[in-house]
Amino acid sequence: MALSIPFGVMDFFRGVKQINIAWYLAFTDIGSRYHRTALGPLWVVVAQGVWVLGLGYVQSQVFHVDFSKMTIYLAAGLPVWVFLTANVTDGAAALLRAKGMVTSFPLPLSLYPIGKMLEQMILLFHQMIIFVVACLLYRFVPNWRIIEFIPALLIVSVGMLGLNLGLGVLGARFRDVRPALASLMTLGFVVTPVFWFTESVGRHSLIVKYNPFYYMLELMRAPLMGVTPPLEIWVTSSLLSAVFLVSGLWAFASTRKTVVSWL
Amino acid sequence: MTAPFPPPKHASVASPVSLNGHASIELLHASVWLPVFAQAQQISLFAGLAKTLSMGRIARNGGGALYVNPLNGVSLSINEGERVGLVGRNGAGKTTLLKLLAGVHHASSGRVQINGSVASLLEIGGGMDLERTGLQNIEYVTRLLGFDKRERARIRDEIVEFAELGQFIALPVRTYSAGMMTRLSFGLATARPKDILVLDEVIGAGDAFFIEKAGDRIRSLVQQARIMVLATHSADILVNFCNRAVWVDQGVIRADGDPAEVWHLYMNSEPA
Image 1 (cartoon, each protein chain N blue to C red):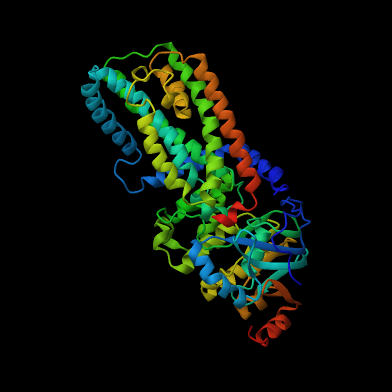
Image 2 (cartoon, rainbow over the protein chains, first blue to last red):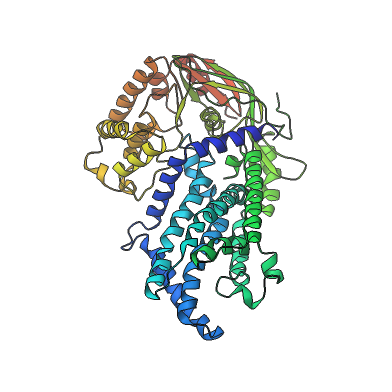
Protein backbone atom coordinates (compact mmCIF):
# COMPACT_ATOMS: atom_id res chain seq x y z
CA MET A 1 0.00 0.00 0.00
CA ALA A 2 2.89 2.29 0.72
CA LEU A 3 3.84 2.40 -2.95
CA SER A 4 0.28 3.15 -3.96
CA ILE A 5 0.20 6.63 -2.41
CA PRO A 6 2.48 8.45 -4.87
CA PHE A 7 0.76 6.63 -7.72
CA GLY A 8 -2.66 7.65 -6.38
CA VAL A 9 -1.62 11.27 -5.84
CA MET A 10 -0.24 11.34 -9.38
CA ASP A 11 -3.55 9.95 -10.60
CA PHE A 12 -5.30 12.81 -8.79
CA PHE A 13 -3.13 15.46 -10.41
CA ARG A 14 -3.55 13.88 -13.82
CA GLY A 15 -7.31 14.04 -13.21
CA VAL A 16 -7.13 17.72 -12.26
CA LYS A 17 -5.10 18.42 -15.39
CA GLN A 18 -7.79 16.83 -17.55
CA ILE A 19 -10.56 18.81 -15.89
CA ASN A 20 -12.09 19.64 -19.27
CA ILE A 21 -12.86 15.92 -19.67
CA ALA A 22 -14.36 15.91 -16.16
CA TRP A 23 -16.61 18.81 -17.19
CA TYR A 24 -17.65 16.88 -20.27
CA LEU A 25 -18.44 13.82 -18.12
CA ALA A 26 -20.48 16.00 -15.78
CA PHE A 27 -22.55 17.53 -18.55
CA THR A 28 -23.23 14.22 -20.33
CA ASP A 29 -24.18 12.55 -17.03
CA ILE A 30 -26.75 15.25 -16.41
CA GLY A 31 -27.99 14.81 -19.96
CA SER A 32 -28.40 11.05 -19.70
CA ARG A 33 -30.16 11.38 -16.36
CA TYR A 34 -33.05 13.05 -18.14
CA HIS A 35 -32.86 11.08 -21.35
CA ARG A 36 -36.22 10.97 -23.15
CA THR A 37 -37.92 13.29 -20.66
CA ALA A 38 -39.75 16.26 -22.10
CA LEU A 39 -38.51 18.87 -19.59
CA GLY A 40 -35.03 17.42 -19.34
CA PRO A 41 -32.78 18.96 -16.68
CA LEU A 42 -35.51 21.54 -16.05
CA TRP A 43 -37.08 18.86 -13.86
CA VAL A 44 -34.57 19.81 -11.21
CA VAL A 45 -35.88 23.34 -11.24
CA VAL A 46 -39.50 22.21 -11.13
CA ALA A 47 -38.87 19.82 -8.24
CA GLN A 48 -37.02 22.54 -6.35
CA GLY A 49 -39.75 25.10 -7.00
CA VAL A 50 -42.41 22.77 -5.63
CA TRP A 51 -40.33 22.26 -2.48
CA VAL A 52 -39.67 25.93 -1.93
CA LEU A 53 -43.30 26.96 -2.34
CA GLY A 54 -44.72 24.09 -0.28
CA LEU A 55 -42.22 24.27 2.54
CA GLY A 56 -42.27 28.06 2.44
CA TYR A 57 -46.01 28.12 2.98
CA VAL A 58 -45.94 25.56 5.82
CA GLN A 59 -43.05 27.28 7.57
CA SER A 60 -44.54 30.73 7.28
CA GLN A 61 -47.67 29.38 8.97
CA VAL A 62 -45.79 27.51 11.70
CA PHE A 63 -43.31 30.26 12.54
CA HIS A 64 -45.61 33.16 11.72
CA VAL A 65 -43.03 34.62 9.39
CA ASP A 66 -43.73 36.57 6.28
CA PHE A 67 -44.31 34.11 3.41
CA SER A 68 -42.08 36.04 0.99
CA LYS A 69 -39.24 36.21 3.49
CA MET A 70 -39.47 32.48 4.13
CA THR A 71 -39.62 31.69 0.42
CA ILE A 72 -36.48 33.66 -0.38
CA TYR A 73 -34.68 32.13 2.59
CA LEU A 74 -35.60 28.66 1.33
CA ALA A 75 -34.86 29.46 -2.33
CA ALA A 76 -31.34 30.45 -1.26
CA GLY A 77 -30.78 27.65 1.26
CA LEU A 78 -32.36 24.61 -0.36
CA PRO A 79 -30.16 24.50 -3.50
CA VAL A 80 -27.10 24.83 -1.28
CA TRP A 81 -28.33 22.07 1.01
CA VAL A 82 -29.06 19.80 -1.97
CA PHE A 83 -25.54 20.52 -3.23
CA LEU A 84 -24.06 19.40 0.10
CA THR A 85 -26.28 16.33 0.45
CA ALA A 86 -25.83 15.19 -3.13
CA ASN A 87 -22.06 15.38 -2.81
CA VAL A 88 -22.22 13.16 0.27
CA THR A 89 -24.69 10.51 -0.94
CA ASP A 90 -23.79 10.47 -4.64
CA GLY A 91 -20.15 10.80 -3.67
CA ALA A 92 -20.35 7.35 -2.13
CA ALA A 93 -21.30 6.07 -5.60
CA ALA A 94 -18.83 8.23 -7.54
CA LEU A 95 -16.56 5.29 -8.32
CA LEU A 96 -19.24 2.59 -8.40
CA ARG A 97 -21.06 4.38 -11.20
CA ALA A 98 -17.85 4.51 -13.20
CA LYS A 99 -17.41 0.76 -13.13
CA GLY A 100 -18.03 0.15 -16.84
CA MET A 101 -15.81 3.04 -17.84
CA VAL A 102 -12.82 2.12 -15.71
CA THR A 103 -12.06 -0.97 -17.83
CA SER A 104 -12.82 0.83 -21.07
CA PHE A 105 -11.07 4.19 -20.96
CA PRO A 106 -7.46 4.86 -19.99
CA LEU A 107 -8.47 7.85 -17.89
CA PRO A 108 -7.18 8.70 -14.42
CA LEU A 109 -9.55 7.21 -11.86
CA SER A 110 -9.79 10.51 -9.99
CA LEU A 111 -11.57 11.99 -13.01
CA TYR A 112 -14.82 10.32 -11.95
CA PRO A 113 -15.04 11.86 -8.45
CA ILE A 114 -13.94 15.21 -9.91
CA GLY A 115 -16.65 14.93 -12.55
CA LYS A 116 -19.27 14.06 -9.91
CA MET A 117 -18.42 17.18 -7.91
CA LEU A 118 -18.65 19.33 -11.05
CA GLU A 119 -21.98 17.67 -11.87
CA GLN A 120 -23.35 18.75 -8.48
CA MET A 121 -22.02 22.24 -9.11
CA ILE A 122 -23.85 22.44 -12.44
CA LEU A 123 -27.03 21.22 -10.74
CA LEU A 124 -26.56 23.87 -8.03
CA PHE A 125 -26.53 26.64 -10.62
CA HIS A 126 -29.53 25.03 -12.20
CA GLN A 127 -31.48 25.08 -8.99
CA MET A 128 -30.53 28.64 -8.23
CA ILE A 129 -32.87 29.66 -11.03
CA ILE A 130 -35.50 29.28 -8.29
CA PHE A 131 -33.66 31.85 -6.19
CA VAL A 132 -33.67 34.28 -9.10
CA VAL A 133 -37.38 33.68 -9.69
CA ALA A 134 -38.13 34.15 -5.98
CA CYS A 135 -36.18 37.43 -5.92
CA LEU A 136 -38.10 38.71 -8.94
CA LEU A 137 -41.45 37.63 -7.53
CA TYR A 138 -40.97 39.18 -4.11
CA ARG A 139 -38.87 42.14 -5.29
CA PHE A 140 -35.92 41.12 -3.17
CA VAL A 141 -32.77 42.85 -4.38
CA PRO A 142 -29.56 41.13 -3.25
CA ASN A 143 -26.82 43.64 -2.44
CA TRP A 144 -23.18 43.65 -3.54
CA ARG A 145 -22.31 41.03 -0.91
CA ILE A 146 -23.64 38.43 -3.31
CA ILE A 147 -20.19 38.34 -4.95
CA GLU A 148 -18.92 36.68 -1.77
CA PHE A 149 -20.88 33.68 -2.95
CA ILE A 150 -18.08 32.91 -5.42
CA PRO A 151 -15.23 32.45 -2.91
CA ALA A 152 -17.70 30.67 -0.63
CA LEU A 153 -18.57 28.22 -3.40
CA LEU A 154 -14.89 27.64 -4.17
CA ILE A 155 -14.06 26.90 -0.54
CA VAL A 156 -16.96 24.49 -0.13
CA SER A 157 -16.26 22.81 -3.49
CA VAL A 158 -12.75 21.90 -2.42
CA GLY A 159 -14.23 20.10 0.57
CA MET A 160 -16.88 18.45 -1.59
CA LEU A 161 -14.18 17.21 -3.95
CA GLY A 162 -12.45 15.62 -0.98
CA LEU A 163 -15.71 13.98 0.07
CA ASN A 164 -16.25 12.57 -3.42
CA LEU A 165 -12.74 11.12 -3.48
CA GLY A 166 -12.86 9.61 0.00
CA LEU A 167 -16.47 8.48 0.08
CA GLY A 168 -16.11 7.13 -3.46
CA VAL A 169 -13.50 4.69 -2.21
CA LEU A 170 -15.38 3.94 1.00
CA GLY A 171 -18.65 3.37 -0.82
CA ALA A 172 -16.98 0.99 -3.26
CA ARG A 173 -15.51 -1.10 -0.46
CA PHE A 174 -18.43 -1.01 1.97
CA ARG A 175 -21.78 -1.01 0.24
CA ASP A 176 -23.57 -0.01 3.44
CA VAL A 177 -21.95 3.40 3.39
CA ARG A 178 -24.31 4.90 0.86
CA PRO A 179 -27.64 3.95 2.49
CA ALA A 180 -26.16 4.91 5.86
CA LEU A 181 -25.17 8.34 4.58
CA ALA A 182 -28.53 8.80 2.89
CA SER A 183 -30.37 8.29 6.15
CA LEU A 184 -27.88 10.45 7.99
CA MET A 185 -28.39 13.30 5.54
CA THR A 186 -32.17 13.04 5.90
CA LEU A 187 -31.64 13.69 9.57
CA GLY A 188 -29.14 16.38 8.64
CA PHE A 189 -31.84 18.25 6.74
CA VAL A 190 -33.87 18.53 9.92
CA VAL A 191 -30.94 19.35 12.20
CA THR A 192 -29.36 21.95 9.95
CA PRO A 193 -30.97 25.38 9.73
CA VAL A 194 -32.24 25.03 6.17
CA PHE A 195 -35.93 25.65 6.74
CA TRP A 196 -35.66 27.23 10.17
CA PHE A 197 -33.64 30.16 11.40
CA THR A 198 -30.44 29.75 13.40
CA GLU A 199 -31.65 32.46 15.78
CA SER A 200 -34.44 30.14 16.97
CA VAL A 201 -31.91 27.90 18.73
CA GLY A 202 -28.95 30.26 18.98
CA ARG A 203 -25.49 29.89 17.48
CA HIS A 204 -24.20 27.90 20.44
CA SER A 205 -26.77 25.15 20.31
CA LEU A 206 -25.07 21.77 19.93
CA ILE A 207 -26.86 20.89 16.70
CA VAL A 208 -25.51 24.03 15.09
CA LYS A 209 -22.12 24.28 16.73
CA TYR A 210 -21.00 20.73 15.94
CA ASN A 211 -22.68 20.46 12.58
CA PRO A 212 -20.11 20.81 9.78
CA PHE A 213 -22.85 21.38 7.24
CA TYR A 214 -24.16 24.37 9.15
CA TYR A 215 -20.93 26.27 8.49
CA MET A 216 -20.83 25.40 4.81
CA LEU A 217 -24.52 26.15 4.32
CA GLU A 218 -24.26 29.47 6.12
CA LEU A 219 -21.11 30.43 4.21
CA MET A 220 -22.89 30.04 0.89
CA ARG A 221 -26.33 31.23 1.87
CA ALA A 222 -25.49 34.42 3.75
CA PRO A 223 -24.03 36.25 0.69
CA LEU A 224 -27.19 35.43 -1.24
CA MET A 225 -29.25 36.99 1.54
CA GLY A 226 -27.05 40.08 1.46
CA VAL A 227 -25.05 39.39 4.59
CA THR A 228 -21.31 38.83 4.93
CA PRO A 229 -20.75 35.56 6.80
CA PRO A 230 -18.94 36.07 10.14
CA LEU A 231 -15.21 35.39 10.15
CA GLU A 232 -15.79 32.33 12.30
CA ILE A 233 -17.85 30.78 9.48
CA TRP A 234 -15.16 31.51 6.87
CA VAL A 235 -12.42 30.03 8.99
CA THR A 236 -14.33 26.94 10.10
CA SER A 237 -15.52 26.17 6.57
CA SER A 238 -12.02 26.53 5.14
CA LEU A 239 -10.61 24.24 7.81
CA LEU A 240 -13.36 21.69 7.20
CA SER A 241 -12.71 21.79 3.46
CA ALA A 242 -9.00 21.28 4.00
CA VAL A 243 -9.65 18.33 6.31
CA PHE A 244 -12.10 16.79 3.81
CA LEU A 245 -9.67 17.20 0.94
CA VAL A 246 -6.63 15.84 2.73
CA SER A 247 -8.41 12.84 4.22
CA GLY A 248 -10.29 12.15 0.98
CA LEU A 249 -7.13 12.31 -1.08
CA TRP A 250 -5.36 10.09 1.41
CA ALA A 251 -8.12 7.46 1.23
CA PHE A 252 -8.17 7.64 -2.55
CA ALA A 253 -4.41 7.54 -3.01
CA SER A 254 -3.73 4.74 -0.56
CA THR A 255 -6.31 2.47 -2.21
CA ARG A 256 -5.85 3.57 -5.81
CA LYS A 257 -4.35 0.26 -6.95
CA THR A 258 -6.84 -2.00 -5.22
CA VAL A 259 -10.04 0.00 -5.55
CA VAL A 260 -10.74 -1.25 -9.09
CA SER A 261 -11.10 -4.80 -7.79
CA TRP A 262 -13.76 -3.61 -5.32
CA LEU A 263 -16.06 -2.17 -7.94
CA MET B 1 5.32 -22.52 -7.50
CA THR B 2 2.94 -20.67 -5.24
CA ALA B 3 2.66 -16.96 -4.73
CA PRO B 4 3.17 -15.68 -1.21
CA PHE B 5 0.01 -15.41 0.79
CA PRO B 6 -1.37 -13.16 2.25
CA PRO B 7 -0.84 -10.84 -0.72
CA PRO B 8 2.35 -8.87 -0.25
CA LYS B 9 2.56 -5.12 -0.51
CA HIS B 10 2.46 -3.81 -4.02
CA ALA B 11 5.63 -4.37 -5.93
CA SER B 12 7.04 -1.88 -8.38
CA VAL B 13 4.75 -1.24 -11.31
CA ALA B 14 5.67 1.09 -14.08
CA SER B 15 2.90 3.21 -15.50
CA PRO B 16 2.60 3.13 -19.26
CA VAL B 17 4.76 5.68 -21.00
CA SER B 18 4.71 6.42 -24.67
CA LEU B 19 8.00 5.79 -26.39
CA ASN B 20 7.92 6.37 -30.09
CA GLY B 21 8.36 3.09 -31.82
CA HIS B 22 9.88 1.13 -28.94
CA ALA B 23 7.07 -0.85 -27.49
CA SER B 24 7.65 -3.76 -25.17
CA ILE B 25 6.00 -5.68 -22.36
CA GLU B 26 7.97 -7.27 -19.57
CA LEU B 27 6.39 -9.34 -16.81
CA LEU B 28 8.55 -10.91 -14.14
CA HIS B 29 6.92 -13.32 -11.67
CA ALA B 30 3.77 -11.21 -11.74
CA SER B 31 1.01 -12.40 -9.43
CA VAL B 32 -2.42 -10.95 -8.92
CA TRP B 33 -4.60 -11.46 -5.87
CA LEU B 34 -8.08 -10.06 -6.05
CA PRO B 35 -10.45 -9.74 -3.10
CA VAL B 36 -13.89 -11.29 -3.38
CA PHE B 37 -16.69 -9.63 -1.51
CA ALA B 38 -19.94 -11.40 -0.86
CA GLN B 39 -22.37 -11.82 2.00
CA ALA B 40 -20.58 -13.18 5.05
CA GLN B 41 -22.53 -16.47 5.21
CA GLN B 42 -22.12 -16.97 1.50
CA ILE B 43 -18.36 -16.79 1.81
CA SER B 44 -18.09 -19.35 4.57
CA LEU B 45 -20.42 -21.66 2.65
CA PHE B 46 -18.50 -21.76 -0.56
CA ALA B 47 -14.99 -20.97 0.60
CA GLY B 48 -14.20 -24.45 1.83
CA LEU B 49 -15.62 -26.00 -1.28
CA ALA B 50 -13.92 -23.54 -3.59
CA LYS B 51 -10.57 -24.02 -1.92
CA THR B 52 -10.46 -27.73 -2.67
CA LEU B 53 -11.83 -27.31 -6.18
CA SER B 54 -9.46 -24.54 -7.08
CA MET B 55 -6.37 -26.30 -5.79
CA GLY B 56 -5.25 -23.35 -3.73
CA ARG B 57 -6.18 -20.59 -6.15
CA ILE B 58 -8.78 -19.30 -3.71
CA ALA B 59 -7.62 -18.52 -0.21
CA ARG B 60 -8.39 -16.54 2.89
CA ASN B 61 -6.19 -14.17 4.75
CA GLY B 62 -6.04 -13.91 8.52
CA GLY B 63 -9.04 -11.62 8.70
CA GLY B 64 -11.24 -14.10 6.87
CA ALA B 65 -11.44 -12.09 3.64
CA LEU B 66 -11.57 -14.22 0.53
CA TYR B 67 -9.08 -13.80 -2.28
CA VAL B 68 -8.70 -15.34 -5.70
CA ASN B 69 -5.35 -15.72 -7.36
CA PRO B 70 -5.95 -15.51 -11.11
CA LEU B 71 -2.28 -15.01 -11.97
CA ASN B 72 0.44 -16.83 -10.14
CA GLY B 73 3.97 -15.79 -10.99
CA VAL B 74 3.77 -15.07 -14.71
CA SER B 75 6.94 -14.15 -16.55
CA LEU B 76 6.47 -12.99 -20.09
CA SER B 77 8.37 -10.78 -22.46
CA ILE B 78 6.78 -9.39 -25.62
CA ASN B 79 8.58 -7.32 -28.20
CA GLU B 80 7.72 -5.18 -31.16
CA GLY B 81 5.96 -6.81 -34.07
CA GLU B 82 4.59 -9.66 -31.99
CA ARG B 83 0.93 -10.56 -32.22
CA VAL B 84 0.34 -12.73 -29.21
CA GLY B 85 -2.71 -14.94 -28.81
CA LEU B 86 -3.63 -16.08 -25.31
CA VAL B 87 -5.37 -19.43 -25.16
CA GLY B 88 -6.60 -21.41 -22.20
CA ARG B 89 -9.69 -22.68 -20.49
CA ASN B 90 -12.33 -20.48 -18.89
CA GLY B 91 -10.95 -18.99 -15.71
CA ALA B 92 -7.35 -19.66 -16.67
CA GLY B 93 -6.36 -16.03 -16.09
CA LYS B 94 -6.40 -14.68 -19.66
CA THR B 95 -8.61 -11.68 -18.92
CA THR B 96 -6.71 -10.83 -15.73
CA LEU B 97 -3.48 -10.88 -17.72
CA LEU B 98 -5.02 -8.52 -20.29
CA LYS B 99 -6.30 -6.24 -17.54
CA LEU B 100 -2.80 -6.17 -16.07
CA LEU B 101 -1.45 -5.07 -19.46
CA ALA B 102 -4.23 -2.49 -19.87
CA GLY B 103 -3.41 -0.97 -16.46
CA VAL B 104 -6.79 -1.82 -14.94
CA HIS B 105 -5.37 -4.26 -12.40
CA HIS B 106 -2.02 -4.02 -10.71
CA ALA B 107 0.34 -6.81 -9.77
CA SER B 108 0.28 -7.84 -6.10
CA SER B 109 3.85 -9.04 -6.44
CA GLY B 110 6.42 -9.24 -9.16
CA ARG B 111 7.31 -6.69 -11.79
CA VAL B 112 5.31 -5.27 -14.65
CA GLN B 113 7.01 -3.00 -17.15
CA ILE B 114 5.04 -1.66 -20.06
CA ASN B 115 6.71 0.61 -22.57
CA GLY B 116 4.33 2.25 -24.96
CA SER B 117 0.78 3.58 -25.03
CA VAL B 118 -1.97 1.00 -24.65
CA ALA B 119 -5.36 0.79 -26.34
CA SER B 120 -7.62 -1.91 -25.01
CA LEU B 121 -10.96 -3.48 -25.76
CA LEU B 122 -11.88 -5.72 -22.85
CA GLU B 123 -15.62 -5.51 -22.96
CA ILE B 124 -17.88 -4.97 -25.96
CA GLY B 125 -19.80 -1.76 -25.60
CA GLY B 126 -17.92 -0.99 -22.39
CA GLY B 127 -18.46 2.55 -21.21
CA MET B 128 -21.04 3.28 -23.90
CA ASP B 129 -24.45 4.70 -23.12
CA LEU B 130 -27.04 2.31 -24.56
CA GLU B 131 -29.63 5.06 -24.87
CA ARG B 132 -27.44 7.13 -27.15
CA THR B 133 -26.97 6.58 -30.84
CA GLY B 134 -23.87 5.15 -32.46
CA LEU B 135 -22.80 8.61 -33.59
CA GLN B 136 -23.35 10.11 -30.12
CA ASN B 137 -21.33 7.29 -28.56
CA ILE B 138 -18.50 7.84 -31.03
CA GLU B 139 -18.54 11.52 -30.08
CA TYR B 140 -18.69 10.60 -26.36
CA VAL B 141 -15.81 8.12 -26.44
CA THR B 142 -13.56 10.24 -28.63
CA ARG B 143 -14.21 13.26 -26.38
CA LEU B 144 -13.23 11.20 -23.34
CA LEU B 145 -10.10 10.04 -25.12
CA GLY B 146 -9.19 13.68 -25.54
CA PHE B 147 -9.30 14.14 -29.32
CA ASP B 148 -9.76 17.64 -30.69
CA LYS B 149 -12.65 18.59 -32.93
CA ARG B 150 -10.95 17.90 -36.25
CA GLU B 151 -9.61 14.53 -35.14
CA ARG B 152 -13.04 13.59 -33.82
CA ALA B 153 -14.65 14.29 -37.18
CA ARG B 154 -11.98 12.26 -38.98
CA ILE B 155 -12.31 9.33 -36.58
CA ARG B 156 -16.09 9.44 -36.81
CA ASP B 157 -16.04 9.14 -40.58
CA GLU B 158 -13.46 6.39 -40.37
CA ILE B 159 -15.50 4.35 -37.87
CA VAL B 160 -18.75 4.82 -39.75
CA GLU B 161 -16.97 3.47 -42.82
CA PHE B 162 -15.20 0.65 -40.97
CA ALA B 163 -18.13 -0.53 -38.85
CA GLU B 164 -20.52 -0.62 -41.85
CA LEU B 165 -23.47 0.10 -39.61
CA GLY B 166 -25.38 1.96 -42.30
CA GLN B 167 -28.55 3.61 -41.02
CA PHE B 168 -28.05 2.04 -37.60
CA ILE B 169 -25.35 4.56 -36.79
CA ALA B 170 -28.16 7.06 -36.07
CA LEU B 171 -30.11 4.68 -33.81
CA PRO B 172 -29.60 4.07 -30.07
CA VAL B 173 -26.96 1.38 -29.59
CA ARG B 174 -29.39 -0.68 -27.49
CA THR B 175 -30.94 -1.69 -30.83
CA TYR B 176 -27.64 -3.12 -32.10
CA SER B 177 -26.90 -6.81 -32.53
CA ALA B 178 -23.84 -8.30 -30.79
CA GLY B 179 -21.93 -8.19 -34.06
CA MET B 180 -22.79 -4.54 -34.68
CA MET B 181 -21.66 -3.64 -31.16
CA THR B 182 -18.42 -5.49 -31.82
CA ARG B 183 -17.81 -3.53 -35.01
CA LEU B 184 -18.44 -0.22 -33.28
CA SER B 185 -16.35 -1.09 -30.21
CA PHE B 186 -13.49 -2.44 -32.26
CA GLY B 187 -13.51 0.61 -34.51
CA LEU B 188 -13.32 2.87 -31.45
CA ALA B 189 -10.59 0.87 -29.73
CA THR B 190 -8.42 1.10 -32.83
CA ALA B 191 -9.37 4.66 -33.71
CA ARG B 192 -5.93 6.03 -33.10
CA PRO B 193 -2.94 3.76 -33.50
CA LYS B 194 -1.41 3.03 -30.13
CA ASP B 195 1.79 1.16 -29.45
CA ILE B 196 0.07 -1.78 -27.79
CA LEU B 197 -3.37 -3.17 -28.58
CA VAL B 198 -5.05 -5.41 -25.99
CA LEU B 199 -8.17 -7.34 -27.01
CA ASP B 200 -10.21 -9.76 -24.96
CA GLU B 201 -12.30 -12.48 -26.61
CA VAL B 202 -14.25 -9.91 -28.62
CA ILE B 203 -13.61 -10.38 -32.31
CA GLY B 204 -15.48 -13.69 -32.35
CA ALA B 205 -18.90 -12.03 -32.29
CA GLY B 206 -18.36 -10.44 -35.69
CA ASP B 207 -19.29 -12.25 -38.90
CA ALA B 208 -16.72 -13.76 -41.27
CA PHE B 209 -16.48 -10.57 -43.33
CA PHE B 210 -15.85 -8.49 -40.25
CA ILE B 211 -13.20 -10.88 -38.94
CA GLU B 212 -11.37 -10.56 -42.22
CA LYS B 213 -11.63 -6.80 -42.12
CA ALA B 214 -10.53 -6.67 -38.47
CA GLY B 215 -7.59 -8.88 -39.40
CA ASP B 216 -6.50 -6.41 -42.07
CA ARG B 217 -6.75 -3.58 -39.60
CA ILE B 218 -4.77 -5.40 -36.92
CA ARG B 219 -2.14 -6.44 -39.43
CA SER B 220 -1.77 -2.87 -40.62
CA LEU B 221 -1.51 -1.65 -37.00
CA VAL B 222 1.10 -4.25 -36.15
CA GLN B 223 3.05 -3.45 -39.30
CA GLN B 224 3.80 -0.09 -37.75
CA ALA B 225 6.07 -2.00 -35.34
CA ARG B 226 3.53 -2.42 -32.58
CA ILE B 227 2.30 -5.11 -30.25
CA MET B 228 -1.02 -6.87 -30.04
CA VAL B 229 -2.21 -9.25 -27.34
CA LEU B 230 -5.58 -10.95 -27.70
CA ALA B 231 -7.40 -13.73 -25.92
CA THR B 232 -9.28 -16.24 -28.01
CA HIS B 233 -11.01 -19.61 -28.01
CA SER B 234 -10.85 -19.97 -31.76
CA ALA B 235 -8.04 -21.77 -33.60
CA ASP B 236 -8.89 -19.78 -36.74
CA ILE B 237 -8.48 -16.42 -35.06
CA LEU B 238 -5.29 -17.60 -33.34
CA VAL B 239 -3.65 -18.84 -36.52
CA ASN B 240 -4.83 -15.96 -38.70
CA PHE B 241 -4.17 -13.08 -36.31
CA CYS B 242 -1.19 -14.14 -34.27
CA ASN B 243 2.42 -15.04 -34.79
CA ARG B 244 2.91 -16.23 -31.23
CA ALA B 245 0.68 -18.10 -28.82
CA VAL B 246 0.75 -18.31 -25.04
CA TRP B 247 -1.22 -20.99 -23.23
CA VAL B 248 -2.34 -19.82 -19.82
CA ASP B 249 -3.52 -22.47 -17.39
CA GLN B 250 -4.55 -21.95 -13.77
CA GLY B 251 -2.71 -18.67 -13.55
CA VAL B 252 0.60 -19.86 -14.97
CA ILE B 253 2.01 -20.12 -18.47
CA ARG B 254 1.99 -23.71 -19.75
CA ALA B 255 3.38 -23.18 -23.22
CA ASP B 256 4.66 -20.33 -25.36
CA GLY B 257 5.59 -20.42 -29.02
CA ASP B 258 4.27 -21.07 -32.51
CA PRO B 259 0.45 -20.67 -32.64
CA ALA B 260 -0.24 -24.00 -34.37
CA GLU B 261 2.02 -25.95 -32.01
CA VAL B 262 0.71 -24.32 -28.85
CA TRP B 263 -2.86 -24.89 -29.98
CA HIS B 264 -2.05 -28.55 -30.58
CA LEU B 265 -0.57 -28.90 -27.08
CA TYR B 266 -3.53 -27.10 -25.56
CA MET B 267 -6.13 -29.24 -27.34
CA ASN B 268 -4.40 -32.47 -26.42
CA SER B 269 -3.96 -31.56 -22.76
CA GLU B 270 -5.59 -33.53 -19.98
CA PRO B 271 -8.74 -31.79 -18.77
CA ALA B 272 -7.99 -30.35 -15.36
